[in-house]
Image 1 (cartoon, rainbow over the protein chains, first blue to last red):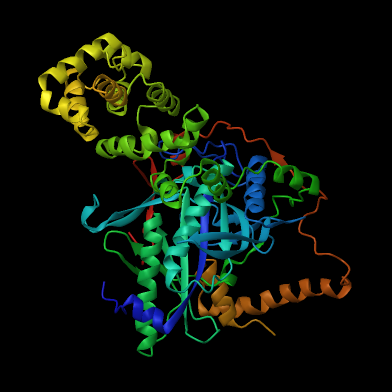
Image 2 (cartoon, helix red, strand yellow):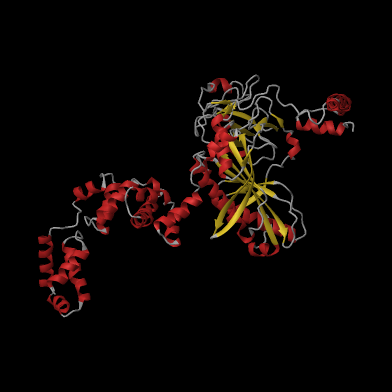
Length: 497
Length: 98
């Protein structure tokens, strides 16, 4: 890495970044876009291929209807128009990731176009205009072998798995996104995060960036402040995590600013993000659009969704995640900070399910964002991977509300549930954790505490109620924590009144 | 607007066909004849005649999202010029990121 970089703040003082984001989403259909091969991730190489996805002579593709439906639902969720009539096209190129020597895609007739979504960064809304969402197929996966690591010294070659070739892919392309200023990298990250949540709620994709089912190409160009003509952009690929999106853009902004400020020119090119080193490097030179020699795919007939079909699909759209979070915060009555803890901890679904299972919102929030978050963190697990269900957390909170256990004992109940000892009430029974409600035993313990500390008892009789703490502590110790502190306090004060 | 040997060289490059200068010079006028012949269609087709990309007046031909058997991996790899670890092995494209 030898790029000159300008300080980010200095770069933003001189230039306005303009973003363009291309997001590829693999659909979670059972079968591929144009054939019946499985789309299952992680199968043995080349076990999910057939004459169609290998492009053998004489094979004929047929469109997966479910994939078209998913594409239209994505388009509607992005606020797009749905084409009344559109076609597939062949995008011709020579690269071994496709045996056909073309990718079946859509060119100037996307299934969905002209939408917009609004995202927020630090409470500031940004409108992201959507150019199009079109259908295409994924390509095979290349593994580069060679040089020092190859079996043949110095030989460099590639190994290809075509299982992924033909998996349905939706490409979502923004129009140039202006006016994001200093926040540009964060806006890009928030947009992809928004898409991920939206696609998940639509149920159309696994949206797992680490498995490549959600991929982002980040375009950025700089305009000198006060001007309006778009600069030359670069496209950064291999941006495989949300964090990488903002880091790669920040890097490109700093790199481009240094070139422009020294009188240089930006080369329009594809660049490659290196997550480990935190830098971009030039990639394969992009062939000009016309070099792909697009033409309508003769083997696939046009798609003409009826308006009834479109409206029926519109009716299946779930509540959008941004709307849902606003609604839940309002219904639950949390402050921004309280609710922010839930979102930051990826606990929204869990808290919602716990509330649905009968817990109070405050109770549900308390367990998931503190005690359980800590345990997930210690075990290196996602919160949702903990061996405790929302229903069990709700049951736990109900035991606390009923006075059967206190918060301290509840933590031991959580230990038991996580250790597979059964439902919360079973753990309470088997571990003998219930708060002692036998008033005789409690009263006897209180009497012993009073007798053991006559000074404290006298102070309370004299009206110094704060002295009760010492006696309550003594009782709790004797009851090994299995008493309701409030009940003990009431009993102590009653005895000495 | 006759095609030049340079135009043909560019097309040949995109199609990965290796042509000598003599072949480029020979093919340019031949491709010209083909283009001119096709261009004559536009003389008889008025603006109200839509371009035809498909011979059949069909739309919305879909299949169910159902998995069907794939080819056995042995017969797939039998088509590969070289194979290794159940994958197709091809020369590395120069300038490509590892």
